[in-house]
Each structure stands twice: as structure tokens, then as C-alpha cells.
Image 1 (cartoon, one colour):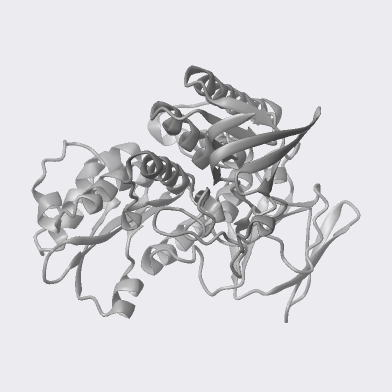
Image 2 (cartoon, helix red, strand yellow; image 1 turned 90 degrees about the vertical axis):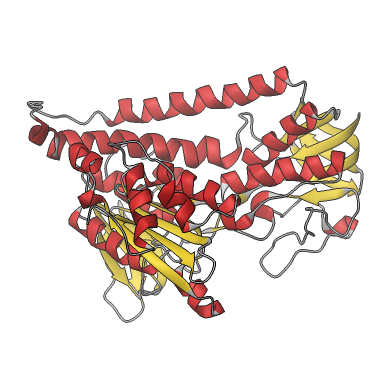
Length: 460
């Protein structure tokens, strides 16, 4: 079978690239080894974790906060099976939605594992045997997999990754999370809200590596009040199953016993078994596919996007790269503004960031001014009963151009979108400060933080 374009992988980067290519007139096919479309993000990542975060937060609110609103719920009972079933229904509906979009846009779907046998030829190993495809161009969008940790013996039950932690049939009495990044904190929060005693182990001396240090420190205090325990600077030497529980060995400390363990030390590119070496595409030291500014590899017919190339492993980054890649193939132009890609941790409160951090600006010798405004001083936040956190905006000291925005607080993931647009269009702090923001809304905190960069915040 011959197609103009074949996309390997139907995650956010792959399926978006395929649909956009079809819109541009390509005869396009997409190869995915899993029966359900959507990739890790939709099936066992972004979407199911957010469903559980929402459900567990409602449970926690009912238990601890509803009474302050005058809502008395009486006896409260957790029905974990129903909660997990809701999560599964959410995932199922969205995966079917992607299949519907493929049908609507006339994207041909092949189920199986793709392997290069030549720069423009693929072997698809499926349930019914091997199918060969030819393509003028191939885009690799196979995403990432959970990163291992030496000495940690995964058993898919008591010791597992995020995939297993999304489907535990009972709330563990005790849970150890290795890794204080987004995945560890989000899933640690889910099970802590539902009743688990959660201990987070982190090798570094801080949580949320790569995000704003000041807000990460503030977030840690909030999470500790919620019941999460942190042990920073902890080097895990090993972990093994012991009966119905686990034993975690830490360098220089006594072992920790727990009922379950979640390994969340990051992800690595899913680039093995694709036959890339056979066509002359060599991986870098981190297992990523080297590409140029337009996502092309050294083999002219092969491109790569998303988690398999350098940059943050984010679904929305992969989506935008997929669009830019196919638009470049069709029109000769495609671009992603990497300084305007937000990162979000969906804890409660959320942590969101876009652009540069203070540390990055200081290290680069870029002069900047900082403006900060707390949720506590915002009327809408008070009405919601969620006043933890702040918005921090960094602007160039000489040009006033917005360089970075960092938010800790309720709905930070939604608020950061305004900042991403501002950075995308090269807006100044004054631009953001002068734009009218509706009252009463949380967005006013962004406006006040922009005003604060000029020393003229109104409500504090």
C-alpha cells in the first residue's frame, strides 16, 4: 500500500499531525500498535489522571470544605470502583472521538508495530501478520515510556509506574512515590486525598525541578498541609516487593516499608524497535532522534516530533510540532514558539509556568523586573475559598517585554493561557496591565501582577 505520508504513533502529536496533513490534502495514514487511539496521554496518562484528580478533589472537598459553604453531606463514603469506572468511560469516549476524527478526515489507520525496512518503506507487524507500506514521507511520533530506576524492581502490582497507579483497586494504607515532578505529585495527591499516607522521595533538594523555585517552595508547604510527606535529597538504592508490601532502600537511611510504590522519575523517548539505525538515523545520548528546525532527520524522507525529540515532554508541544511539521512539508513554513509553551502540574492548587524562570534569566545575565500578586487579595479567590498561591510575572528591565509567568493557585492551568498568548505576541508588562480584565475573576490576579512589575498594583 502506498501513501504520501505515514505517521507512526497516534498520540497527541501523531494523530494531530495526521489530521492536519489530511486537511492540507495529503493522502495520509497513521500506524498505532494499541487498539485504542490517543497514545499514552489519552489512554494511561493526561486524561485518566485528570479524571481521578477531579474526582478525588471533589471527595476531599466534600470531606473537608463543603461544610464551610453551608453544605452538609452527612456520612461520606468512597466508592472507588465507580470513580475508576468514570475515569475509564472518559478515556473510552475520547479514544472513540479520535477514531471518529480519523474517519471524518479520511485518515487511514493501521494497527500494529511499525519498523523501517527502508527510508520510505515500513513493515507493520499486526495481529494478522506483516503489512508493508510505502510513503513519500514518514513522521515518527511514538512518544515516551516511563523511565526506569536502577535497583527498583517493577512487578506491575505493588511496585509500578503511573499506568498501574491509575487503576489500583483499593486505596493503599501507605504509598511511597519516587520522584517529586508532575506525575509523582499528581498521583500522590490523588491517593492522599482518598486516604493513603503518602511519602514522596526526591533525589534533588527541591520539588518540581525546572519550575520556578520560589513557587515550588511555596507549593511544597501547601502540599505538606494536605498530608504529603517529603524527603528531599533522598537517593533510592533499590526497591523490592516483600510479601503484600514493598521495601524501599535509601542511601544513608533506614529502609521504608509501604503497601505500594509508584516510580515517577520521568520518561524516556520510545525510539527502540523502530529500525531507525537501519536507515541511518542515529539516536543521541538520551535516546532521542536529532532533528533540524523543521523536524527533519538526516534522512530526507523521515521527520520526528514530540517526546522522541529534544524539549519538554508535553502533549501540547507534540501537537504544535505535528502541525508545524506537516505545514512545512506542504507550504515550506511551520513554526513553534518554544518560549510560549506552558507547563502545568494539576495538583490542588495547580502550578503553571511559561517562559523563563528567575534562575534562567539570572544565569543568562538578562536584567529583569518582577511583579507578584497573591490569590489571597483577590475577591473571586476568596469567594471560591481557595486563596493559596500567587502569580509572578518577569519582564525585561529595559524593554518591559514579558519573559516569564509563573502561577501557583486554583485554575493556574487556565490562567497561564493568557500569559502564553502574551509571550507569543511579544507583549509587554504594560500591555497586560492595561488590558481590561473582568471583575470579579481570577484573571485579575494576572493583571495585578503585571501592574506590580511597575510598582503600581492596586489591591495590595
